[in-house]
Amino acid sequence: MGADKPSADGKSGQQLSKKGGKEPLIQQFELKDVFPHFCDRKTKLLPLSDVPYVLRAMGLTIYGDEEKTIKEQVEKVDGIGKPVTLQTMQSWVEENGKNYVKSYEDAYNALGTLCHEGIIGDKSNTIKVPFLRHLVTEVGDTMKPETFDKILKGGDMPTNAAITGDACSLDDFLRFLQK
Image (cartoon, rainbow, N blue to C red; front, side, top):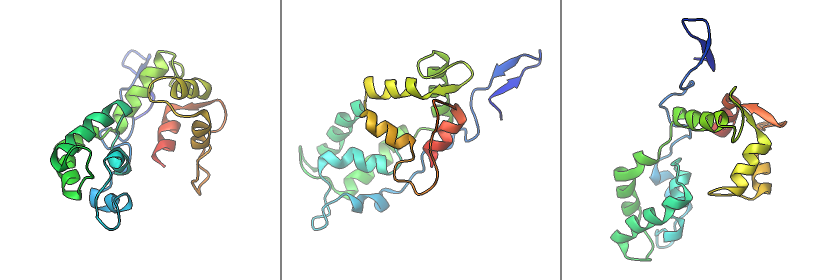
């Protein structure tokens, strides 16, 4: 699979998705392996406020505006505002987790649309880092500009993973996110 593939008439046509297809973009982990890192060591209960962090640590994609709904769903079992058990979380994951797994194809198509609309790049699927930085630090679920810069530099990763320069291909960006 390639970015632009010639069509039957010899013109370049946009392919819908790249390698990875329906596979999850982010590596998925079992709740039982993640939960102990967040729960209270003595009570084995998870503070309600940490529910979204645990789900993200599992590899699920949870948006800021979804956090409240998810917390409301899990707190119905263990009590309003009360800490949550592993079993409650496991039941929620079994029932709802699949709705929060984003595939490589989902990410490619979403970012490709943002490129084609000129929001983060151009029609050749080149992401312009200053455009992306503006989007993630000013619109919707935002992050601090310093955090964005640290992520693109590879954060605390021991490898040489980084996005350098003012532009990168959509594929390079997604490979970077998967590291």
